[in-house]
Amino acid sequence: MKFAAFTTVAASAGEATGAADIIENLRQQAILAEELGFEAIWLGEHHFGLYGSGDLPNPILLGADLAAHTSRIRIGQMANIATWWHPIRLAEDLAMLDNMTRGRVEVGFGRGVWPYEGPQFHPNADPRKDQENRELFQETVEIVRKIWTEEYFSHRGANYTFPAEDTVFSHPGFPPDPAWHEDGRVARLRVTPRPYQKPHPPLWMTVSTDRSVSTAAEMRLKACYWQPPPQRIRQRMLLYAEVRSGVEGRTFRLGEDQAVMRSTYVSTSMEQARAEAERAVMSAFIFNDPFRGREVFTNPGEELADSVELGWDFLEPRTLLVGSPDNVAERVQELQEVCNLESLLVEFAHAGLTQGQMLKNLENFGDKVMPRFSSPD
Image 1: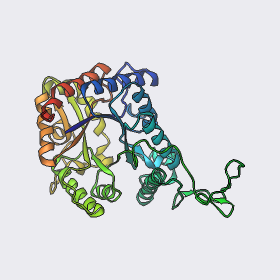
Image 2: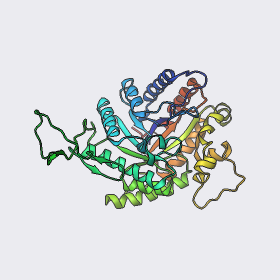
Image 3: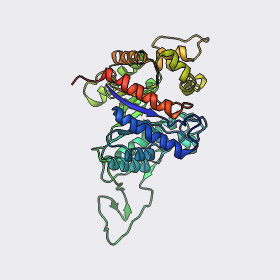
Image 4: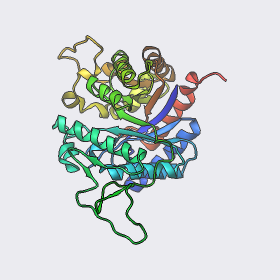
């Protein structure tokens, strides 16, 4: 099993007084993750910093800094919210990062979930406009792929047209070329640089529903889950494998090209973990009821009573990796057995923890849990 560290770049309690301090903390976390043997570090994207997490909005730029302070660990985004990016700039920046790291990049895409974020970047990025948001997402990813795989590209879609109408270019050193020039106009664009990895870095999508799972498979994007319990993830992994097998014309096995992210806190015991981190870990779930919904935590065929509260006792057996190393290893083993899990993202930095607690959490997982799942030499 492959293990990666994940963070939405949470500010540490009382220590990080500004962006420079948060970035320095993140550097220390990435360096430690590499030393511990994590395969990758993944960074989330959020804007406007309303709740102490996601205060640094550009995972690509942050990834460039972390790459400069490390040498082996892969640098990923889970996710770049594609609907918030101009597709040419997204393709250019990711390709630059892939070249700067000589191919250490993993690329994640998402649609965005917050109504207060999306509309600030594009009218159709508003997740309340479901069809328009999905169309914008798929079109943006399609353009990025075209840029990376075609020497000259053009695009006509609902949201973007490239080249822009009536684009002209005249330079004595660059005579007209039919590869990009037609009837006195620029007909296709050449975007540089191309990615270091060929044809491009691995591409991922964050998924949370049957529909998004099917979309990821249809678009040939790897899928990453967060909140569902193992049996629900298994159901959706089987759906992904079925759809992707039809798209690719070969059989995809359970768990292939898929990953799970889990909120994690490893301490000496379950009681100690709860005492140290309950409030911090649970801060990520306050938006589920009612915004994200409670049904995301249900197993197939299960209905929750109205009296059920989305607290630690309910969530721990379903979606958390918390407690002693034995407790956490048991949950990881369950994911491996139920889902044939190949890749796990460990969310180790929770808003409200100190930097020391975040580093210790990462160290405890790396030293006391990961070795139990290493392949024999």
